[in-house]
Length: 342
Image (tube, rainbow, N blue to C red; front, side, top):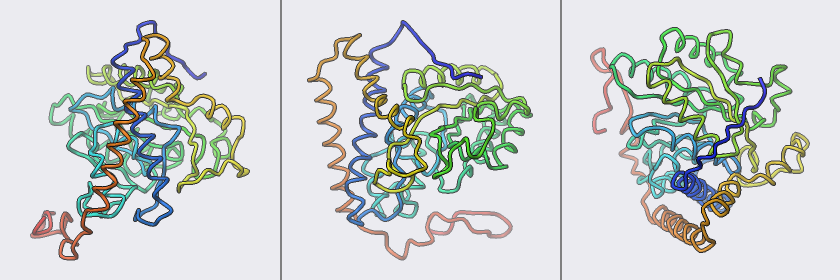
């Protein structure tokens, strides 16, 4: 299967604006995180999605408010694009009690169930079976909720991916599997790990339809996910969408390791030239006449929001030791209940 590119003569200014603003907010927030990180104020490792913002923006805008989404340790983009509270995000990075998991999860475990982001995890592929279980619950309860499971290319190396997909196809669950293929599992290229490098085909033998798209174009991502969600919501089978992209920063941390031997410099150069923000900005300017003043206002407003979130995080208190066991589960009388006091 060759890479597929969606085209449309019906570009919508409102949708493009929302995509651009989501990506800009992610970019500015993550650049601030990269700036702060060397100070040791951030209490956990960080995995930045700069260069991959189009996928987070397109996926989250295409989902309905009732839908759920699960992500990976590189989850800041999903959190922001889905509408998570930016102050809670930075407070979580700082390990503060006002964070989205009260300082207990850090960067790799952000969550915002109030907007449908049900969780991210540091363990590769670990949210795939959880998302599949959520989709089973949706089906059993007769809901119209579609569940999106977002994971990296390294996750298809894990057995739980195939187990989950097989179950979802057998039960015809309302789930959309989304692979962010940024070409590397840490420093290991897809081509070093697989002879078949079109990861959208990995569920074929199990009956899972797969499609591959350009992941650095937010409009393409939005249309692809929107179509898949509508099909699944109306009773269609589970699907797998692969979006090819590229991460600009190192695997973990605030630096750029472009000189490292594992990097494929042709792909890196192409990614730097095809910045997903610039693609949508160019379309807004050329097709709809959006001015530099408008772009500047968005930039100014989001920078202010990011700075306020940082101030909030720095002024927030650390958790008290008395709350160590809050929000945990324990077995009591044969049942699993929330720990007393949660």
